Structure formats: structure tokens, C-alpha cells
Image (cartoon, rainbow, N blue to C red; front, side):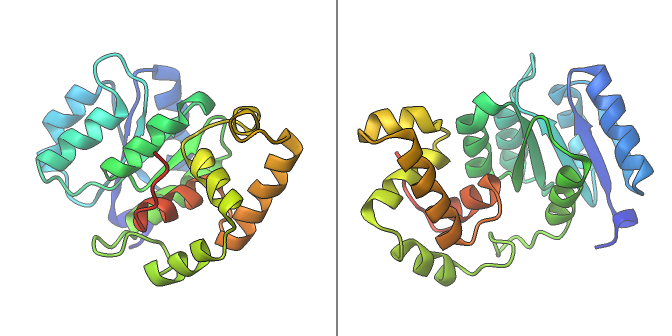
Length: 206
């Protein structure tokens, strides 16, 4: 789907964020509409055709996770990208479990969110992964050692390296090595992609 074939709907309670993101996306050829609250967007959602949602996770009237769940309950087919602070990764994972296509950690470069929006626009409902089949991801999971699977579970749960090291009784440096091995074996280019893989194949990190 071409950039001009859909509209990006930005939901964020901070006016400065809405304006700067809308300006950047407009300059890159996207059609954009901004919404001050999740509630106002929900009222508008039923009329949306060919739309992409970009929403912050932490908003006063409704969290991004709640917004996505509400959209899902109304069967609105609007792929969502969530924006999150570093400490909100566990909540971002919940958003992806609720149906979000991707999450972007602040601060982010323009190209990162542009690529996420393009992935969302090209989402095929019956294919949860971008390019990797479920079989391929499961094969990569099987290549992980027990320790690497433990580190993977902790990483996608949003734990920092120091906490993982403490929980597993290993050094932070060792965690970094295992984490790098996991990213390499899973062929993940980023944390969001790693999380998408884990969710798509039902990997349990609880």
C-alpha cells in the first residue's frame, strides 16, 4: 500500500508531541490526522478506512493498551504502533499482545517510526510476522541454549541487564554476551522485532 493510500492517526495528550510528529510525517508524504485524547479517537474510529494508529502508551484518559483493546473489541481494523518510554517495555509488550503491530522506544529517529508505520500499513491479518514464518522462528528458538532462553524471556519482559544478571546469578557482562547471541540466533535487528517473534510463536516469558 502506497503512503498516500492511508491516513496516520496520532493520539497523544501532549500537543508538542502531536504537532512535531504530524509535521515530520507530513513532510515525508503521509496523510496525518491528530487526536488529543484516546476517547475522542474512539468516537471517530468507526468511520476510519485505511488508517494507521500511532499512540502514546501513557495518557491520562486511557492507556495505549486500553485503547487498542477497545478497538479490538469493536472489531475496528486499524493497525497500531505504540510509542513508549524505556521503562514501559512490559506495557508495550502487553500492547503487542493486544494487537499492536510494533512499539517504538523514546527517543526515536524519524526513520524508525516511518518504517514502523509502513510495516503497519502492509500488515496482513493472517500473517503475524513481517517476513519470518512461524516455522523459521521456532527453529531459531530451538537453537538457543537454556540460558539464552532464560535471557530471552527476561529481555522481552522488559528487564534491564542488571536485573537479569541478579536474577540469574551471572554478571551483567555475561548477560550482554547472551543477549547478543540471542539477537544473532533469532536474526532480530531490534528489540521490537524480537518481541514480535516471541508473541507470534507463543513463547512464554511469564
